[in-house]
Image (tube, rainbow, N blue to C red; front, side, top):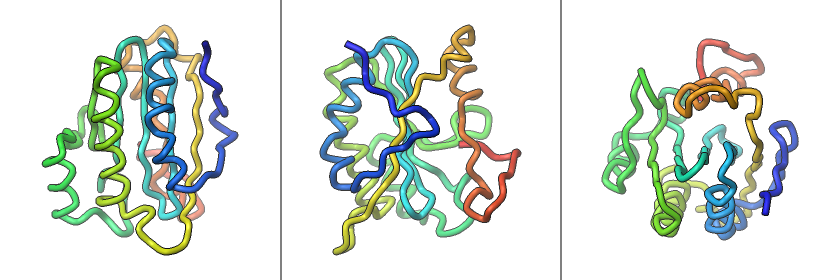
Length: 173
């Protein structure tokens, strides 16, 4: 069964609570899809988590300070991510904190790690009002001929500067 995709330009607005509650199903569907599929959850403060699934691999990423010029993560928040099993960003590879899993059995633990990152590190959903996020899922079909790492690099969404009303082509997610 194919996963229902929103398309890159058609995000769905939902509460952070609903996004986190439905995360196990979302990640399970992405893993089961088999083909390349991406998901980004953008929060109101320009922070995000994103996911890449292909074959028997699912990669989760949490924004790093490489993309945060305002309200950067504190040293304590960065240490919390690493202590929880997130790999640190690298300039030559993945510019975000990341975790890769290779089996469906690892999805519950990945879900817990993403939930802790969203709530405890990024501070989403920790206020009395209902916070929302925009979630989009899509298949980057135009890069099917590339290797997984090349395709991930090509499909990164440019964000730095976007919240200032302009696009900085030198920065990517």
